[in-house]
Each structure stands twice: as C-alpha cells, then as structure tokens.
Image (tube, rainbow, N blue to C red; front, side, top):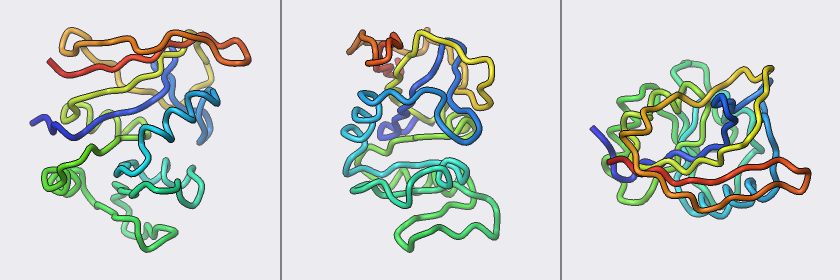
Length: 166
C-alpha cells in the first residue's frame, strides 16, 4: 500500500549509482543545499549505514533509522529506531507530514513500493566503482516533471525531476 506522505530524495547517476565506499558518488554543492532546504523540519528515514555516514545530526530534522541489529545504538537520544520495515510502516501511517527516504540502497529498494513521490537529481554521468545503487523502477507507473536542468560548478550536468506515482 502506497503511503501518501512517503517521499524519496536522491542524487543518482545514469546507471542508478548512489554511493561509493560509504559516501556519495558525486558531491554537488547546489544539490546538497537543495537536499537541506527540502528536508528541513521533516522526518528523514534511513538505514543504519546511511545513519553512520552522516554528521552527528543534520540540523532541524528528525531521524528515523531502520536497523535490525540488536546492538545498534544511535549517537543521540532523539533518534527513533525501528527493528523492522513493518514497524516503520506502521509508524509512517500515523504521521501526517512528509517523511523523506534518504538511503541507502537497501532502504530505497524496500520503501519504493510504498513511496508516493521521488525527487531525483539525475546526474548525466556514470561511475564504474559505485557500490550502492538506487533501485530501477518502472517509469510508466510515475508521472515526471523536470524542475531543473543545469550543471555544477565543476561541469557535471544534471537535471532534477519530481516523480509522482500514477
């Protein structure tokens, strides 16, 4: 069942590349600023590895972590931890506001069937060394709207699209 308040946000390469060695494949300042502005004041849900890769806290966001490991202990007391995907989905049903899925690859794959919207920065480049990927999805199930077409200060061309489930 699709959750109307569940939105994915990611920067992906031509082959759906997301991550490399625990970090982003591409660091585009404008895109990082867009991520900050878009997720500010919202819940952000992620897996344990994504949580571990982030700074101690992204200011003014509420952390939700899906981590099945029994020994996982968050760095701060205000992080809500879910041991199962079902536990998170039950929580998401009780929240009226938008929840942003921010990674990693396994979490994107698990939550894609439940997401109503995706905000994707589509980078016109590839990276053969990437080790984390955004799931492939059937574009016929989504309506897309391009909201940006530009290039970074260091010449990386990219566009940003909002995909809404049909």
